[in-house]
Length: 459
Image (cartoon, rainbow, N blue to C red):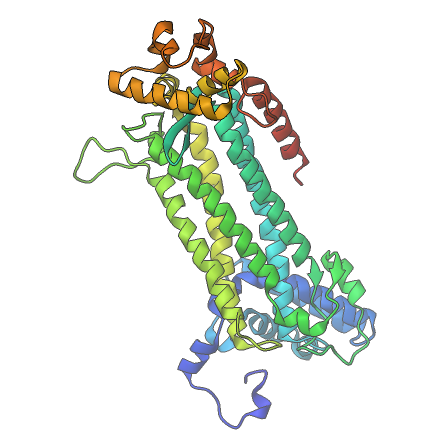
C-alpha cells in the first residue's frame, strides 16, 4: 500500500506509478537521506517523541539499510515512488512497526529539500577542490612560460605582444572567481530545511537547533514555506556551473585553435586526441571539443530548472521533482570536465618558436610606436594617425615597422630617432607596460605570487 493510500478508493495503474516515480534518479540521494533520517531519529528520541529503544532500533536499521544499498542488495522500483519511501519501506521490513515512527514530525517536502542541500554542499566542495587543482596546473604552466612571447588578440586579430604566462594567468583569475562563486553557493545552501514539515511547520515540540548541529548546517531556514518551496540554492549552483563551463569552453576553444596548422602554437598529447576513420594524417583535439560541447549541456540544465520554477505557486508542487536531473547532470559534467582539462593541460607541448614567430607579423608593436612618439611630446591622437599611415605604407611595401630605415620613418614624423628600434621589439613592448596587472615581466611575477596566495587560501 502507498503511504498516502488511506484517502483513496482506487489504486493507480502501473504506468501511472512509473510516471509519478522519481526513484530512477533520486536513488543517488540515499546516503544524504539516511544521514538526515538518523539525525531526525535522534532528535525525536531527545524530545521524547519516540522512545530511546525505538530510536536505537531505527538507527541500527538505517545503518543496515545503508550497508545493503551500498552493496546493491536493495532494488529501487517505481512502486516505492522515491528514495525516501524506498528507505522507509526497507527499514520497516527490518525492524517492524518502529520503522513507521521515523516519519513523525517531517514531510517528504522538507526531507527532499534537506537531501538536496546536503548533496549540493558535498558536490560543490568537491568541485571547488577540482578548480583549485586546475588553477594550480595553469599557474605551474604559466611559471614555466614566463618568457614565452606570443600574440595577444582582440577580435581574433593580432593586437599586442604578451607572454603565455600572462595569457594563462587570465584563466587562473577566471577559475578562482568560479571557486569563489561556488563558495557563495555553499553559504546559501547551508541552511537547514528539516523541521519545516510540508509547508507550515509541525505540531510536535521538535528541536531544529539540535538537527542543525547534527547535520552541520550554519543556520536554520527561518520560514517553513520558503524552506520547502524554493530551489534558488540549486539555481545558484547551476548558474555558477554554467559560468564555470563557459570558462572551460573558452580555454578549450583556444587550445583547439592553437593546435591547428594555422596557428601551430601547441601540440596536444596523443592521449587526449583521436584520429580519423578515413584520413590517416588527422590528429583531432576531441577531448577539448567535448568539454566545449558539454558547456551547452550545462547551460540547458540551468534553463531547465529556471523554467520549472518560474510559474510555481507556493509551496511544494510535483513539478519540483524534476529539479534533480539537471542538478545531477551539471554536477556530473563539471566533475568530469574539470579534472580532464587539468590533466590535458599538463601534457600540452608548447611551441615557443612558433609563438614568437607569430609576434613578428601583424604590426603588433604599432601601439608602442605611437607611445614612443607620445614620449617625444606628440599628442596621442596625432601619433595614432602617424602610425596608421606608417602601417599602410608598410603593407604596400610588404615590410614591418622595425624594418623601415630611420630616414623612412622621419618622412612621417621628424620625432623619430635611432632609439625607436629598441623600443618596439616584442620584448621591449612587453617590458614597457607599467600599469598594475599588465603583461610586463615584473607584473607577471607579482601576479603569479598573488595567484599562488589565492590558491592556498581556497578551503
